[in-house]
Every structure is written in C-alpha cells, then in structure tokens.
Image (tube, rainbow, N blue to C red; front, side, top):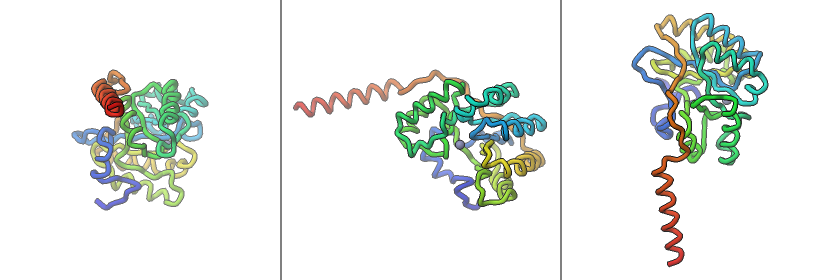
Length: 236
Ligand SMILES: [Zn+2]
C-alpha cells in the first residue's frame, strides 16, 4: 500500500500508542464510520439522515460545547442508536495544553457525554496524557482519515482516500463540521455506496464499560515507594 501519512499511518507508528484503538477486529468485513467535532445543526442532522437511510450505525466524537448548544441533536444521535465519544469540551489540542487543564476540559465534556470512548482533537497527545487517559477511556484513533476538512484537496480525493485504504476493521474518520461539509456531502454517500458494493457492513464502536481507575494501584504504590526512597537518600 502506498504511504500517505495524513490518511493512514503505518503499523510501526501506531505502535507508539499501543493502548489506543487504531482498528477494530478484522475478523469480519466490517468498517466503522466515525464523525468528529459535532453535533451541529448544519451538518449532523444531514449525516443522521444518510445513516438512517442506509441503516448504518456509526460513532460520533462530540465536542462538549456543541452538545451544550444543541442537546436535541445530541439526543437524536443516541435515539438513532449510534455510539458517542468524548472529544473534549473546547476541542483543545493535548500537545499545546497543560495536562491538568486538558483533563479538566475532558471531564467537563464528560458531564454531558456519557461514554468510555475518547478521541483526542487533532489526533495527538503528550505521552503522559496518553498514559493517564488510557486508564480511564478507550482512546479511539483511526485507520483511515478521509481528510474531508482539507480545503486543499478535491472531493474526489476525499472519496479516494477512504476507498484506497478501507479494509476489514477500519475505523474511518469524517467530520460533521462546517469546514468539512462540502466534501462530506459529496463523498459520504458515495463512500457508503462503494463500500457496500464491495461487501462491507458497518458498525458502531462499542467496548463494555470497565471499572474506572485513575491509576492502577500497583503503579501508584511503586511511585510512592520510589519517592520515599528518594527522600531517604536525600537525608542519608
Ligand atoms: Zn476534532
């Protein structure tokens, strides 16, 4: 497969974040459509219509402030049987944000979005943020990014990105955002039609809720033990 990093990351890069979900099981010919940055009335309701007509369940990574603004669209996502995930409250980027402020923003969104799924805006996190959040959420990344938000490519290229890289178990990323709308309106129905013709079925991303823990007790214990040793060596 040709290398196109903005669309699909090779295995050795995804290995940097082994606890994150990059792809679902490849055992059945199923793909997983995901929609980031909504819900907004201009785009999300249209996406919901397309999914309903095609009898497809998908996953929406919602931004807290949009859920706050448009609760009725968020409710419609749930009523239609789709999955939802946390995409922070203000769509902030982990790499540029102090970790505590980042977690606060995520927990603010969690008050509105009841989900054990988290997707970091812009796709990247600091190492410590990744480790901390992986204890609390399933961090869902992607196998294929459509690049629907990219104004420098054509709608045909958006469709091609999806069809070139989709495979069994692919998590495919679109955006229910104003920026992506023009590309999405054209490419999404065509992508669904083509993938169906290739024999793919579609599903939402679901992981059973696990007991939530900030740190596993063992790590916490080791950290405390190390700190006391450090104290002792200082006094010695
Ligand atoms: Zn986003």
